[in-house]
Length: 516
Image 1 (tube, rainbow, N blue to C red):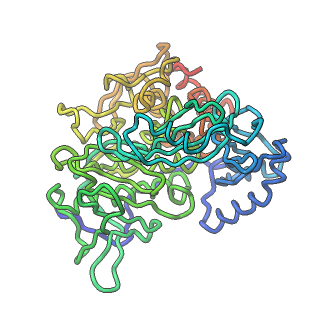
Image 2 (image 1 turned 135 degrees about the vertical axis):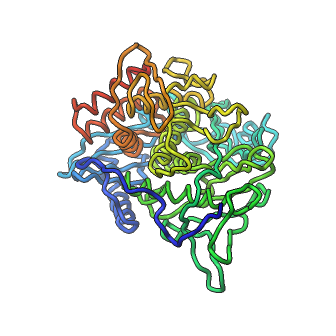
Image 3 (image 1 turned 30 degrees about the vertical axis):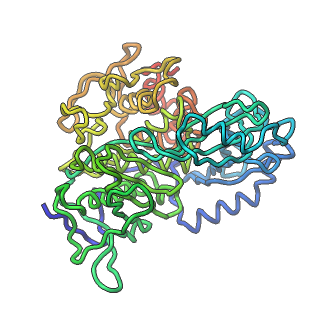
């Protein structure tokens, strides 16, 4: 099968309808930049209105404007010039200019007795490196506000490799007074999938000044796809072709994986823009980039926010590139989460981070309406990584994978983030489709509930619009499952009204996964 490329061609089916009123307005790159600049100029008065301490300052990260005039401004905080980790907040201001509410990552007052550390940055780096097998680490002084009480700390970033060859950027928080490790999390967000099943697809390419074409989608922020050719560092070589006809659908052709990666990125871009009103992952109209053929027989794919890029391995025996449509949507959505709520990749917030990528990766797959890879609520169903044709994860009953949680419990936060994500994945399925037995696109599902209740779904479109609004305007870096329930209920109230059928369905779906 020969994959034909068309410059800046459409990659998706017609968009589905979106709600009005509290839905976010699409902002051009210049309009978003102006809104951020204006909010930063007013940050001092905002800090005073919020009654922040004299040594605290607000730094604007993003501005979201709703159709009804409400403005949601996301801030990071500094204290005495030091970054405050876990101090992020979002203000919600009505069209009339009155403060409607504030979503905070912590309710604690930001203050430390002194900004003089008892231990040095070198000591913090040495402690962070212990047991990692790495020799590369940086450290900076911060205020750690994600715990019960803000403390002066060091944030060390240890770089190396994880056990399967995935790059590692381990963030370690060390108490600057005692030298004790407080917290750690992995910043490289990983996922899995495969492709070679999307058939003949349109691609965004750009003709070069000399001759031929590059995999450069100028119509979608300049998304490019590069060939690492078995390497594990650097950007790689931009894919180039003489006749703009790419790949042949087999792993033996190096362009095939690039076709799937470029197509997946285009569909994901279109999904965000047409369904959620977002202009690119960060909302700034700029694309990420993709790297394919990472390492040798590397069975994974990952998002790295520091390079703002997606990377794909070639799978078992280098025969199954992990570049499927749902994987592309999954990986790019890690970038979306980093640009919005910044959910920490550990414990319950890490599970919500992974679930967000599963939710939007699945939504992208449905949105594409590709007959060769139809939408479903199965994660990684094309991979056959288990060797028996089963997917990696199931959204209708997550425990079918043998490790994921169907329902919330006090132990959920102790699970690997790919398994604690099961609670939110199950919530999303129930909110979209409802409980019980049903068939969607030829796949049979039978979703149970914690309390034996019956949940009636509101449809996938409303479900992902509610999740996106909660993620972009109410979730913070420390949001847990209880906070996710609060945020999605507020999002449903904004979009459809408190007490509406959609609002009540959100409450019922959370109750059905034991989040009350």
